[in-house]
Image (cartoon, rainbow, N blue to C red; front, side, top):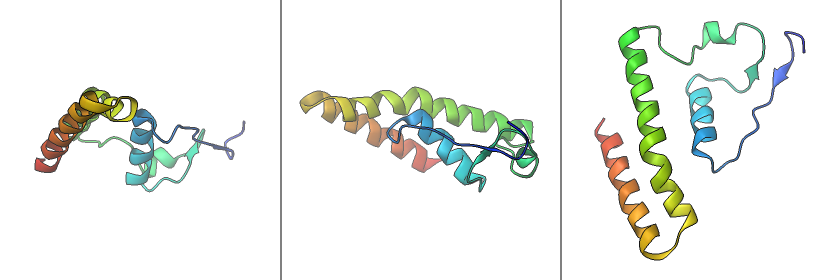
Length: 99
């Protein structure tokens, strides 16, 4: 693969991990990933300031550790378990909205 070829992002639409990648790329205005090239110089995925980088990593971890399980409960269960997942998810959204 030479420097001019694009890499296609293959993902599952319902995967929170793939969603995280799509959101990060959209935030940076990146339509596709380049295997080689300088897209990262113009649109870095992480801030250059160390404090802002730490905040970004905190929120990425927050989403990974807090959103995944309630989301899975909503998608993969029924009844009382699903309702519990919905309540947890709403509380997480309230936390995010406060920030």
